[in-house]
Length: 125
Image 1: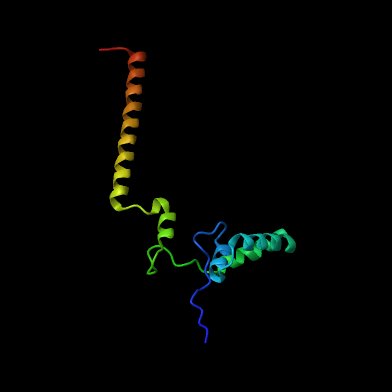
Image 2: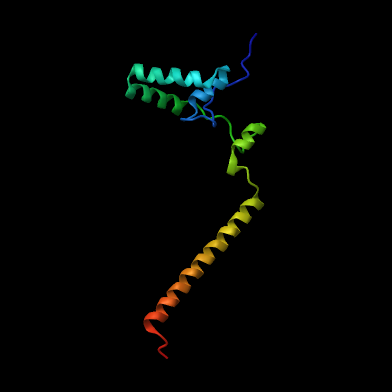
């Protein structure tokens, strides 16, 4: 007896809601051909009804299990996440760098204000 091991999900790697990518992953189809078929189907059924049907599929099709769940991530998915693949220390360092930049900008602005105050008011002691 055949047991399906893959489930149908919307893909996190898809272009528009991940519907075509999810179907392509589910049935091992080339995603570009599936996207072309989808585009032609939307045009043939009428733009508005086709988009509504696509949106309903995207709404009811569950998103593939993602980050923070119990599934094993592949190296490809881990690299594809980009900025979400950062450690707490990386984030802390980035925050500290941004904090220093903002403090420098604030200091620069206040220095300019003091300069203008001195120009307009002079030394009125």
